[in-house]
Image 1 (cartoon, rainbow, N blue to C red):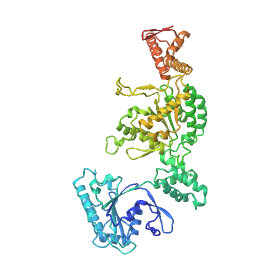
Image 2 (cartoon, helix red, strand yellow):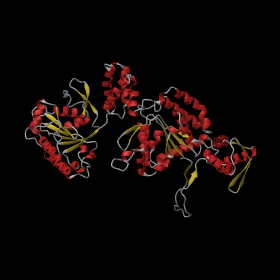
Image 3 (cartoon, helix red, strand yellow):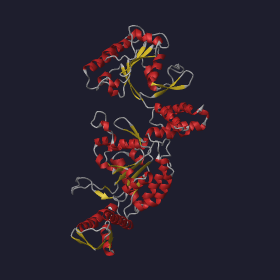
Image 4 (cartoon, rainbow, N blue to C red):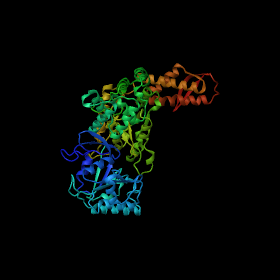
Length: 631
């Protein structure tokens, strides 16, 4: 593939910055190490002002050809040695420097050494280049070289200093090196001593395409949908801009593949964002686009308060955020919001007030199964290195191939609710990983694969704000005495507004002053949902619900009809609801201790007959032991 290089306004104007950097420094550097986005396509203008997309090899050849190169030799371990362009004068020039070669030739390191020397120190004034593709695979490990590998890289280091510039007639008659270009996945894939303090070798990182590149590429790809001049079609221009924004994090080559996918599925230009979602997630079915989802959420306005009792404000705010997610309006105020998670919730408040239960209720509403939520106990991630469990170990570490628990789960099913319980107990380094998720909706695992959270709901729970640091304890003479005291920040009986204000203040103080992560607090924004203490009225409803669950379980397991007489039930209710500081979980623990345990003891001692009616006529305590009178 050949294009004419533009010269107006300077050499290679409008070409990718990394290629202009290489072109501008050919007179001072004999070798280059290119890493990063190697396998993309790149925007390349031509002399007539039009733009096209070229792979890296073709882009390098067009650049070098414009500097007077006669040919470009490319070596990789799979295809062997290839000459660009194929045939003609290039083949003759290559033969004069390298001797006769065949495309399938796969020279040893010793043979590759001779070819590199022939190009970098030519015996005649022939301008050329040598590209070593997949150079990361030459050495088994860059820090533990085999003897042959060590000798090869030693020679290359010396060759970088002994290379000879070449003069040729044409557009650039001044002396230029015949460059050796290493293509590596990461700069560290070559021996570090090869490039350290070696001014003859220049390292260049090829970045991912920015928004401007993606917008221009989207306009080029619009031709596949029969669009002529996008600048004259406002609807097409808007669709191209939306396509470019949705393609954040993708390469230009991936945008080409998305276009092919859209054409295969008969998707219009305006619907390309849906094709981007399919390409990113690999899932055709989108639960968020199901027609019945809005109806389920509307029904949930009645069912969720019956399940999460005594939290009307928290339930209402959560359902508002869920409705926003269903309509695709999360982060709509931002310039670019399409890749962010569908919904983000931060549940804070006293323990046992329904935070986990509300997370399950949301999961059941959206996905039809409350077990579809993924829970992480963040107290297990208090160590600095424990974050590897989430995204996987770095290359070279044990378990690297297994990936991370979080990234693997999202890759398997991107449509899910993820619950991060007691987030304040996680190590601050681990919290940093959530910055990228909340802002960009994606995360790269230890294997280098990117997973997307754009269709997920993230829920963080916290007990922050129950207690806050008090004054420093001091001795009688005023000297410090131990750690600061902790005082209760909220108490039962406070109004909800006061509880909400104090908890939000404590959460803000924790992230800004204790963790020094104000940017993470900003990502949560106004999505902090505060839960109130369980009121006496709510406690009785929770008791009735949990007591009914016990009676139903007895019936299901043993076909018994269980009932409790009024006085015994009143006594049991009082025992279970007199302490509300532990919330609904405390009521359940009291029921288990004061009713389930003595009931199991009493039923275990008698012969059970199916359909038998068992009535609890009395309940009494003897020390810490509770006894039931059965009839």
